[in-house]
Amino acid sequence: MEIKPNEKILQAFGLEPEGLNVRKFGSGHINNTFLLEKKQDSSKYVLQKINVNVFKEPGIIAANQRMAADYLAVNHPGYLFITPIPTVNGEELFVINNEYWRLIPFIAGSVTVDQADNPKQAYEAAKQFGRLASYLSGIDLKPFKASIPNFHNLTLRYSAFQDAIKNAEEDRKAAAEGMIEDFLRYSDIAVTYEQLKTDPEFKDRLMHHDTKINNVLLNKTTFEGICVCDLDTLMPGKIISDLGDMVRTYVCPVSEEESDFSKIVVREAYFEALMQGYLEEVGGTLTNVEKQQLFFAGKFMIYMQGIRFLTDYLNGDVYYPTRYPNHNFDRAKNQLVLLQRLIEKEPILQRIIDKCLLISE
Ligand code: GN1
Ligand code: MG
Image (cartoon, rainbow, N blue to C red; front, side):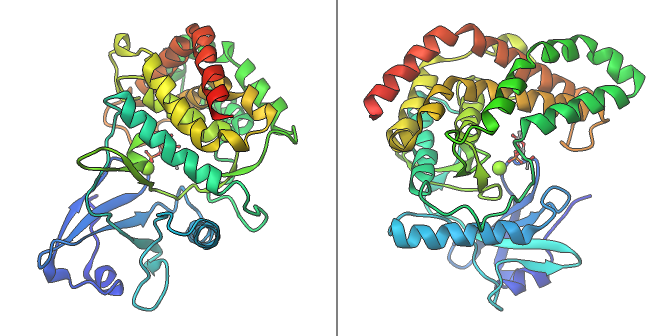
């Protein structure tokens, strides 16, 4: 079913429907996103309907964002941190028929890319996420809540995977048998996470939790980083989430959507660029335990994303939108191959990390 913002929603934000061009925007899986352009002066806005099946309490997103914005305004004035444009009644979210809508400014002169095309882009994006993490590293986490509870809790993702194996329809289970075994063979990743989780030196931090390159706005002519966007999952977490999702999505020339798995390779130059950009910003705030887990970050995120896709395949595609019957199967396989390619290069990638750590100290 096509979802379109109706007049009431636009008017709630003080926009005149006749004076606007509205089109679908972005490539996210979760929310519905539209680009609005005023016919009169070409100014643009991003309008989003929040997916309440995923974000059960959208008010948490708004509150987390507001607290971070207030802290940054005081401690890092001048830092560009995108916050929603309130409704004419001063609310951050407009609620209608149990739908939650919000309006976000479109930053003029910005673009996003879905895939890193050169190491410079990986460096610029990582620098933006590093800066965010560094600027927020002193914030009091107590008032923050999880917009998705247990989002990157690999222990629970792993047990959801085991439940899915148990409950899957026979045909899907049979088709996935080999891949299930392959993922189970890497269960040490879940064990390591479980041990790390309770280590006090493995710090809780405010993390973005979705550091794909298209969540960074780049200058459309110079491709320098402007700021991060999509702050729905800004919540307490661990450094391996943000760093790991960058490794997962920047080092490979093809995305998780690619089903020609021979194209999946780990590009060292991109790994180095993102590590350098990230550590230049956040390196000075890391504990020793965090420093020791920088290679683990990539394994952690690729493994978790792989089992999330496979879990969804076994559950009958209930979470991620799919375009063909084996879509989640292929995505899971893609992540498995990426994990293998990453692990093969561990010695060389660890040397890169050590070098970047030295520079950042
Ligand atoms: C989802 O919607 P999007 O693409 O920003 C997912 C991420 C996954 C990603 C995989 C709330 O993000 O965790 O890494 O798909 N977000 C949620 O493409 O589940
Ligand atoms: Mg997104």
